[in-house]
Length: 485
Image 1 (cartoon, rainbow, N blue to C red):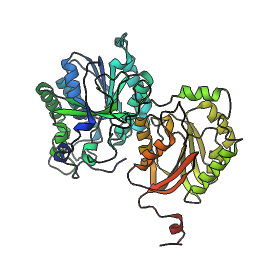
Image 2: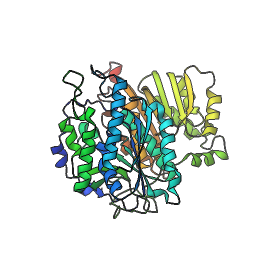
Image 3: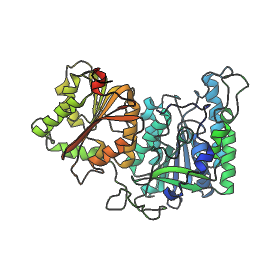
Image 4: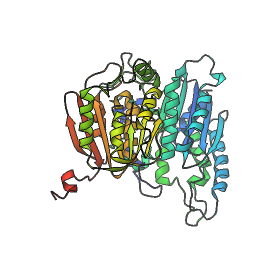
């Protein structure tokens, strides 16, 4: 996650106001929305990031549910006046009062999951969001009539990332429209930061204008979170979390969201030049588990990992490109039947090998059985991201299975999972494949845009591209060996 604190000086609202984003922000209209489901990781997320949207939806008489994942009991860890249990009780009441101020008829669901550890409770949150999307009152409405709105996956807070990833997973599975709202990114980021969508990758910035009534409701809701906008006491550790400079980002006459263009272009206007789309005009969607189930149905080794010289040679190039002879903890994303995993196990103390397909993983487990420190797990990425950090992350040709939005999250999670001296290795086929949302070169262009990483290896052939990225500043292999300064 991004390193920041609430009390450190952040990006001023004046800088955001001068950003000149008008040419890359689409107007957001609620004409195709019948049900609104807002996910909040902590009390006040819903008011800060989506309070205006909730107020407008309430004015239009829409069905609204706000799901609160945690009670925010970790907001003041050094408070001398309130215990975490005290804070939880206070913040729950504040949140309910805030939602009532925004939309009195809205439903509030309190999940009581642990603040700061939401990534370990994704299943509970996923179940709650899925239940709301599938609720009986949905009737015969089209899937797109339900909007799921959640914290931005790249907002920089681990709970926000977990909430956003769960929301994206459920929306992708059900066809609901997904919108994400930034909160802390306004504080630690800047307008020119590459983390923000530019409109050329299928993910857009959307702006919802707020009338005077919606702004008044939002301001009232923000003020209802007294424990966050005012000090708990004058004693150290009880300072306000949402301080005036930070609060200014949420006092605008509009709200900003991040999301893809709807399939029918509703509320979108014309498609921007250069946007990645499918033949229907929609941004390409990530491949699902069903695609790989069909792919593996006719063969235990459909890619020929065990039989093709091309694959054996590519593995040799990959292993030779690793900057260090040995690594501690390694993560392999897209292990398939475990052929490369077997070689990586010889170079690492521990290896977590993941894939989405159960049949491939069964073969991998047989191949890797008995090897010390090797764990094989089924995970759908980027939503089901493993906890912890790693000395080596291997992105085994799965980037082009992702939509542009999911790829951005996948690569950012790879970057965030690297230890200070870690290495991210990525290899992708360069020839076009009609079923894939992206091409290999597109994946590596996105990889090159990640901040804070040095590309220390680049191997490009007509068939594949292989690159190694390490946190800046990264020494070369010769420098590590003392051969050059």
